[in-house]
Image 1 (cartoon, helix red, strand yellow):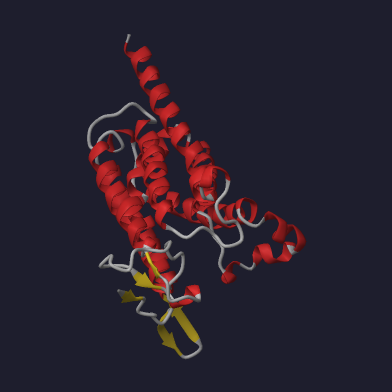
Image 2 (cartoon, helix red, strand yellow; image 1 turned 180 degrees about the vertical axis):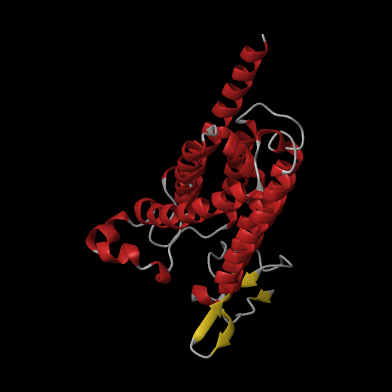
Amino acid sequence: MLVHPQFDPVALQIGPVAIHWYGLTYLVAFGLFLWLASIRVGRSPYADTGWTRRDVEDLLFFGVLGVIIGGRLGYVLFYKPGYYMAHPLEIFAVWKGGMAFHGGLLGVMGAVALFAWQRKRRFFEVTDLIAPCVPTGLASGRIGNFINGELWGREADPNLPWAMVFPQSGTDVPRHPSPLYQFALEGLLLFVLLWWYARKPRATGQVSAAFLMGYGVLRFIAEYFREPDSFLGLLALNLSMGQWLCLPMIAAGAALWWWSGRQAANRST
């Protein structure tokens, strides 16, 4: 049985300036996005329609704003609405933690819509571009969660070779290292699948649909190993909040994939 290494959350201290590992994982996530999206705009069909690296840089700026604003508001509305209704100024205290992926996704979608409108691009053209570039950033974020010893897993069989005690949980119960599961599933595996899927021509919207379905399914699975938020616990049907939020993602992805295929078929007839 393993024990979480208890990393120092500060990666580098320069006088009064502290650089945290979690901040570095965000920088890595944005750097990977910039690199991967730049590769994609250099290929057909994006290279054929005037996309440039400058567009990617601008899109990253829009996306960062969407992640931060949407992620924070998603946490406020999905996880602790009562608390923040009573303490509205706490909404702005992002340094205390509290970000939600599903809220961040909605924030990014809003940012992409604004970018697409400004550049006169189709919304799903933009989302198809960025979808395969997102999972590596998610993987980086999960490494940050693991370094911080947060979002630990549910109780595991002590005989499981990688069962781990997370002292931050306040117990010596062996647990699943769920941030590493999510790193492997929502990060690496989803990246490989989407990058492979997007290499061939697809109907506009289908790569985005594959992301929604893929993330939704893999996150739903990973949630079975992740300890539910203590202030929520398990909800109806013994599902966590994360699982309930994944269900509409999967449904929306399936509907979008079917609709995109129908639209492409109609245009070809």
